[in-house]
Image (cartoon, rainbow, N blue to C red; front, side):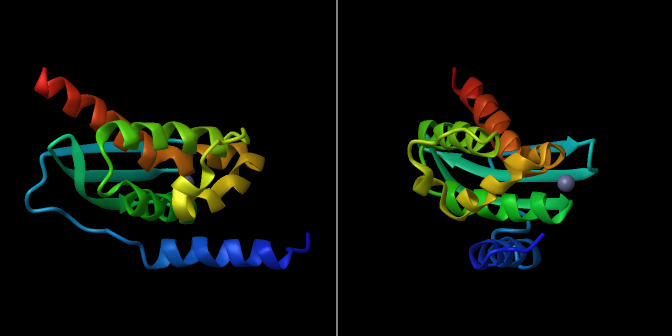
Length: 148
Ligand code: ZN
């Protein structure tokens, strides 16, 4: 299967995120943390978040996983830092729709993660792509409950 120039570019961006992930590590002053596992691939992710004033102030991720799961976690942190909890939750929904091959109204809001739309053609990899986003979603839900 020949790759188009655009596909090659997408692959390169995905590889760059996986090999040199943004915001990998740990947070000294995290307010929330979560671990999530993707049993079908063996991906494990830990997120540490600092959620203050209803906003995702900072995120670090750690763990191990395949190229797609690592790249996706890196892309996720890029778009989420600085967002309100409601905005962040909306982005997780948009990303979930994207990787299922659905139309997303504001695809640009997803940043580099929009390049993972090709995952829709590989159902086995969808869970790799969504792992870090699901982890964030769970952490946001848990953080909301603390305040009630
Ligand atoms: Zn994986």
